[in-house]
Each structure stands twice: as C-alpha cells, then as structure tokens.
Image (tube, rainbow, N blue to C red):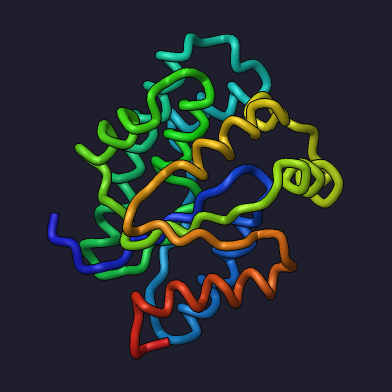
Length: 203
C-alpha cells in the first residue's frame, strides 16, 4: 500500500469524548482544505454488526470468538475504508482502533501486547493516537446522564477500570495522552496542540 495520507486514532474508555473530538477536528481540517474520512469501530459492516449485538449479551460467544470478531471487523475496515483513504492522501480519523481491542479484550483475559502485534501485521500503525483520559466515574456519568444511555456489557464500571489500567500502560511513540476531563472546547484545544505537529505549517 502506498501511504500518502494520515491516520489519527482516538482512544479511551467510554465517555471520554472521542466522538465529539473527532467531529470538532474534522470540521477544522475540512475548513482548512483537507479531505477527511471520519470513521469508527466497531464498523457497520458484517462483523461490526455482530459485535454490536454483544453489547446486550457478551456471554453469547467465547472470549476467543469475540476477539476474532474484532480482528475480522478491523481487516474489513482497513481493506475497505482506511487503506484506500490513506492511498488517496486523505486524513483518516477513527473513533477506536486496535488499541481499544488490546484494552477491552485485555480486560477479558487476553494479552494486550499480543493483540497489538497481531493487528500490526495487517493494520496501518497510526501517525498519532489521541488517548483521552478521564476517571471511570466521569466516563460512566457522561454515558448515563449526558447521553441518557444504559451501560452495555462493555461499559460496566469494573470492566472499565481494568480497561483504563491497560490503556494507561500502553506505550508507543505515536501515543499522546490528553486530559479528557474538561469541557469539549478545552479538550479540543489540547487535541489541536498535539495534532499540529502532523500538519505543520498548514494548521
């Protein structure tokens, strides 16, 4: 694959503001003339839909089957969306990527580093990972009170505490850790300071 574009992944536990920050960054980049593809995982593809069914009953598959679904979904996502966009020179912003799989499946008992290694055999390494950090209690509050949603099987507090611990331990030169506890504009300012290095002197 000839890679001309940029890949930025937004990661963090549920309720840290990933979707909001992608929307805000997309708007800035498009206004400044960049072609942006904003996408998410799990996808709306055949495997992503199966993963979303697990939100209500995660025990319907084995941990191995669950991990396989995430890998299959990502392979399809890379082949159909991410790789073509990068080849066209576009900026890809993804709401979750393989760091989320490492953290959430790691919390379920898998080895996070092995998950990352398996993904990097086929999935492009991001140019930057925006790791939004916030206490589990705040993330849960945002999901329940601000979104008005019921916690799904991946969002239970005990699980999220394990996930947050794994996210905190992940290392990589592409990872930028950002305080996600502020309001959307404050966090956006922190995001812009970090992603600016990828676009200098354009933004």
